[in-house]
Image (cartoon, rainbow, N blue to C red):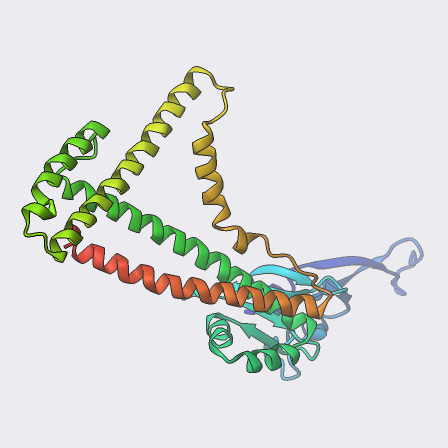
Length: 312
């Protein structure tokens, strides 16, 4: 807070006060300023009192805000309409959930808090959650939920990138360009099948594995080209007949994609029920841990694909 006036939002309210020096004191009021607390909006008689009202200014006259929360996305309010839980973005870009405690102190839940909880033994996690107040639990639920949603989005984004790299690798393997048709793929497959058939390569286990890997590439590309054709045909029909429904295959594909994020989006809990919040945190923590495991596998595969685009 750079100045008391700035801390109070610069708001002064004029109220009527009779002046004993005025011969018309009953009908000619003199204005008096009231000042608003920047935290709870209550009106008091002086600027200093307004700043001290909710702990914005300490007794020494210096700004201290143990009971005030930093600016951010308001998550919950108390009965007086003051922010109780807020999610803050730090200058570094890191995000955290801050909870105001009854004694005016703060409790912060951030990436390190969530990571520690996920990596701790089940017994320690249970004790930790049991010792939290309902307000603290509500803040933790929000932070873990946001981490789960962000982690899920990042995972699916990188999964899409892996699919794209895999498709590029397969196209290059069969010497096809992005405009290749199903017929082009079939022709390329038949040529390679003759060349790579185990019987023509000593019949060794290695030859069989290479041939099988080639078939898997073919099947993956065949499926992708088929899906692309369905999408193009659907788009053409949609342009001709706007009210026509999408093909069943495309709808199923869309539903499958949406279902992949269900766990991260459909979590519900009762913020007034501690047992409900504890159960929700445990469930989300398990899902977040699973995402972390899958992400490690995915990143390794992405690294391999980047270093060996042809899958060799």
